[in-house]
Length: 275
Ligand code: SAM
Image (cartoon, rainbow, N blue to C red; front, side):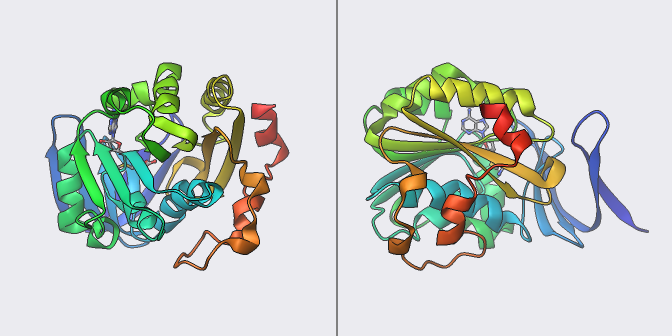
């Protein structure tokens, strides 16, 4: 018998994948967690019926949420990931030789444990000696750590449940204070096709705090509409002024020096969201 996984991405659109196996399901303190194997995308982490990451396309999201801000910053030493319990962003961060410490603050310890058990390809750096794993609320964490980080990445779930506060202006203010004087932050900000109001709101909130605010996008097949956005707030460095000739070669599949700037060239309908 064929079994298919369906995610209802909006009230009228979804994604359906043929599954091979269900490795694990549980209700954690925070969400419904499932780890399944699919024919097209390989192993897939699902939280509350929403795809978080898959073996086949995770590289796009994890490279783009990390390398764009890290190579925009001239010398990032200390980075923080909020959410991101699968470990993919951490794996990319520690590819940067200048990084001395990377902190992961994930609210749901079960996401970390299940990712370590079933997704070693993604979670493989979580035990690295440069990495500190904190199980706790990212909002509380940034409020308790001031003037500390060079780069902060908000690798959150959609704005529901514990992630609602990760899309609020108060949180961006706390992030601003948690960054050093030349710090940069990036947040995943959903789909330009399906979440237009959210993108406009987050961009304006970030712009009210940071002197440099930029939106960039990339293609992620398993996320709603297959087209995703990230919002960057920077205190000093502008990604459009990065000297891309000086970006060293690191092991990536999506990110490259050419893409570092080209991702900021937005289709007109997306540019219109943040005019
Ligand atoms: N790449 C993914 C996406 O865009 O769908 C996100 C992956 S990551 C698994 C998202 C994580 O954010 C989840 O594991 C969730 O538990 C965590 N999270 C949600 N709210 C949080 C909060 N307030 N503090 C820290 N982590 C949070």
